[in-house]
Image (spheres, rainbow, N blue to C red):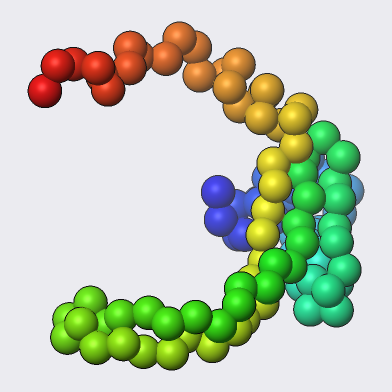
Length: 106
């Protein structure tokens, strides 16, 4: 699902609200979440999951093309942890899983 798809779905479910107003609401939610993460705050949406910022330390890496060592600077990156309720709903909707092929003797 894309952001525009989400706006469409919300607009369908709220016919008394214009599509333009729906877009403003969705954008406001995403902007607020972005700003909270930028400030280092944790976002928790019960039944869905949580977002937080993790710090990745500076490290040495290699350029895969040349093999040359390169310094990778420290950075902050958003991290999502799925909630138990969402995980269970997604897993339940799939039906039976195919057999695991890891032990096929190759």
